[in-house]
Length: 482
Image 1: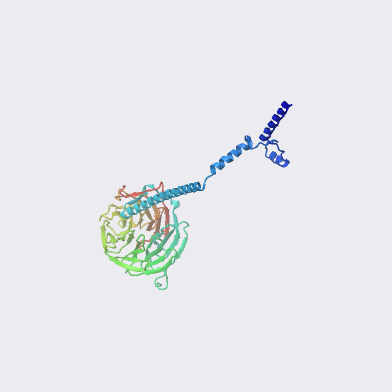
Image 2: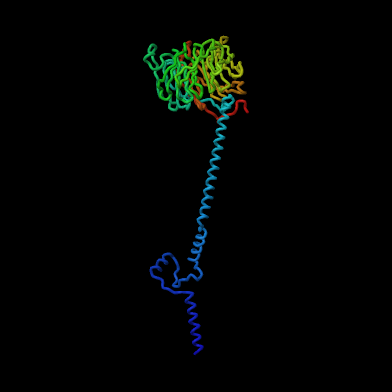
């Protein structure tokens, strides 16, 4: 009896120990169905916390606990982490700002270097070697003037052309479409008091570098100032005693230079509608004028055979000799070099530091006439692509044909090499390159702009837009090659 009692006690203890390790409960039907939907294998026996974790639940719970431990941080640690993140963002922003400033400094330094080279006359875009003869089918012709075109200018953005003629009218053209944007009609002689505009042949024209003002000069000694955008008349300057044959704005300013057959050069302040001063020196009628950024201008003196550089602040002038005939046109290539053309058929390239031409091309457009009576073609207009090695000349002929020739300035402006010819019909009275160098505009007339010595009936009074094609982009470098 004692043994059986002890045995029963041992069995009771074992049963108690088993109950302590594992508990049994019945799973509710709703919970069983939800677990079955979740695809879990159910067991009537649910392990207690003291048992080893099951593969399904234990691994997940362990991972959750580890994740909680990983992201668990004190308030101080959080502040430190956020401060480090903020400092890293500041560092990145400062680095980006420093890179942008360095890039901007490089750009500014490059621009300043270009400006210095331009002021010294040493900046030269070498694009002549890349120019190709234009396709004649691509040349566009604009017609609107009734009498010969005498002068023209291109707006600084290359979007518009302003032209004037012997019919006293001014036309503003859209370059892209070729349409007239505005027409300022000419008036008849004797209607000066009533007519807003010119009543005599317009011989010269200039536009300010900001595209704000347009100036036009006529045979009636007047200079008209217009608002270039609207073509609204602002005021007129009087003071010359003969035809106004040359106009030019100083680049970057509203200071206007004018030249006349009265042999004088006058200086005006257009923004203030004011006269500044008059310069004398030429011994014959002045036929052409040009200027750039410096406070000076260059003029061609016609029959006096001189080209002059006028230094406005010093009230002095430099006199250049070289042509044998009447010098009818002059243009600056840069601040130190210029080109001129004469009725003896010669084209001269000048350096402002030498009184004689650096090079002269005689019979630049060859000769015409019977054998033994040959005469060179008259150089009636010149144009330069600013700060480049490209020059254009226009020849006027008493026969029906004419031509525009493009030249390359080589060997430090000591040579002029012909590139190609563009045949045209009529007098080439005006030439202008676009500021970007994409096209050349030619003003054609049946007569020369300054007179009526010959008339070519076959010619059309028109404007030709000649596209300039390049094989590759030209490079910019100092003119001395350094």
